[in-house]
Image (cartoon, rainbow, N blue to C red):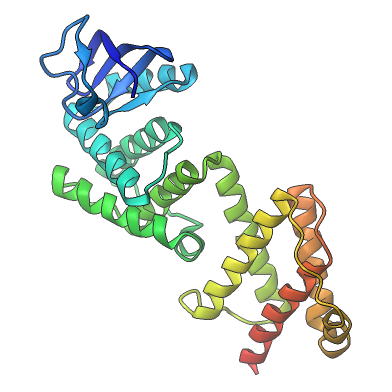
Length: 280
C-alpha cells in the first residue's frame, strides 16, 4: 500500500489522511487514531489493518455518520468488517462501511426501543447466499460478545445482503430487487401448482438457486446451451409445466427489462416438474 500521511484525527478509529495515489482519503482502522497527530506517517503494517475510503461520496457519507455512533460500537463494526474481509477473501466494495454501519446503528436503536423489523427475504437469503449468511451469523455473535447486544435472525439476513453486495460489488438495491423477484416467482409457482413449498427443503434450495443463476445469466446476457430435442419432448410430455415456465420467464423479462433465451425454459420446466411430482 502507498504511504499515508495523517491530516486530521477524528477519533481513535478514523483519520483524514493524504494518500500518495488517491489524495485525501478517510482511513478507518481499530485504534488507528490513537496517539496520532498531523503529519505522522502510517507505516505499512498499520495500513494493512485499515480501510481506505477513496470515493469522495462514500467519504462524505461516512463522516456524516460518525457524530451519531458511540466509539465502542464503531470499533466493533470496524472489527466486524475486517472479519468479513478475511472470511470472504474478497476486496470489499467500500460502500459496506457506510451501508453496514448505518444499518447496524439504526437496527440497534430500533431494538433498544422495542421495535423489531421483519425481513421478508430471510429464507431466500439463507438459501441463496449460504456463505454470506454464515459470515453474518459470525458478525452477530461478534457484536453480542463485544457489546452485549443480541441481534435477531432477521438482522442476520439483512447483514448477509450487505456482505453479498460488497463481495459481488453490486448495489444493495439490485440485490434486494433480485430477492424480491425470486420471492414473487416462488409465490407464483406455489399458486399455479397449488402447493406449499417447504422453505427448509432441498427442493426449495435448488429452486431458488436455479432462479438466482437464471437472473444472473439474464443480467449478464449469457446464453445457456440448447438441449436439442429435449425442448420438444418437455413441451409434449409436461405441457402445463412447460407453458408455466414461459409465464415465469415473461415475468423475469418484464422485471429485468432484458431478453431470456429459449433454453432457460428447459431447465425451469424440469424444476417445476420435480416440484409437481413431489406433490402427487
